[in-house]
Length: 386
Image 1 (tube, rainbow, N blue to C red):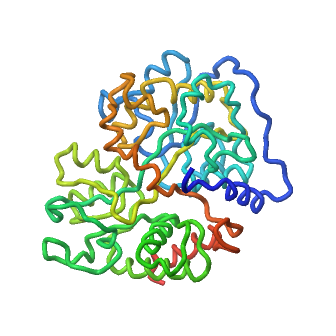
Image 2: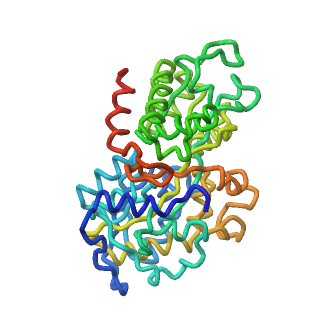
C-alpha cells in the first residue's frame, strides 16, 4: 500500500525497544464485564448525545454491555502518549505518530483479533498497517482515518486555494490583505511533515521521498520553511474548539485543520470550507489500542467490537468528517453516512494522503534520518522564534 512502509515499524521498534520482548500476554477469552472502560480519545471521537442528540454511539453500548464509558480527551499525540505512560486508562485512540512509540515503550498490549468478531469487515488497506502491526502482531484495531485539510474562509477565498502556500508563504490573499497574522499552524512536532510535504512538491531537488524520513539537509530546509511560517502565524493551534473560535471571532482565515472543525463551523453557518491542495496532505489513521495494564480488559474488548459493528463508524464519520475503517458503513444504512458522504470526506483520496508516522533514524528511503526527538525539541524552538 502506497505511503505505508512496514520496514519503518520494525526499525522503530528495534531502535526504541532494543533487545526486549514486545508482546505482553495476549487475552484468549473475554470474561465478565468489569462495569466500566476508561478511554483517552481525540475531541469529538466519543459522543453520547450531549453535544448533539442525534450523535450518540455510547448510550446503547452502555445499556447492552453494562460498561460505563469514561472519556479523557487529548488534543495532541504527545499528550496521549503522556497519559498512557501515566496509566489509569484502558484504551486510547492513537494516531500513527504515537502508536508505535507506545508499543515500543511497553505501554500497549497485543490485541487478539479472534476476539473481535467484526475484524474481517475492516478495510483491507488498514488491517495490517505498520503503525499498529509489528512482526505480524496487531497492537490495536483501526478506528477512523482522514486527511489534514486546508480550512479557509470562503468570504476571503471565493474559490478554494490550490496550494498550501497561503499558510507558508508571505502574500496578499484574494481580499487584498496580507496573510500575516491571519493564518494558523498545528503546534505538534508532526507539523514538520507538512512543511516537508510542501517541499517535496516545490523543491524536488531536495530528494524527499517521505515527509517522515528527512536527512539533515532536508530537515533543515523544512525547519527554515517553518521559521518563515512563524512570521505569518497568528496562533498555533492544538485545541479544536479554540481554533473554531479563532475562525469565528479572531480573524483567522486559513489553516491546516481537521474535518471536525470544518463541519462544526459550517453547521453553525460560518463561511468556511476545506480542500486538499495540489501538494496533497498529511493525514491520520487512528487506532484503538489497549494499555498493557488495563484494569478493564473485558469491557475494552466489548468496546472495540462495538466500534466496528455499531452505528459508530457511520455516524462518527458524519460527525467528524472522517472515513470509516469499515467500508460498508459508508452505505449499509447502519447510521447516517452515505456513499456520497464518504467520497466528500476523502475516502477515494487514500493514495494522496501520507499518514502520520513516527520519524526514526533508521529509515527506508535513505541511509539515515532525523529522529522524532529532534523534531520535538526543534519545533519548540521554531514556535519560540528560534
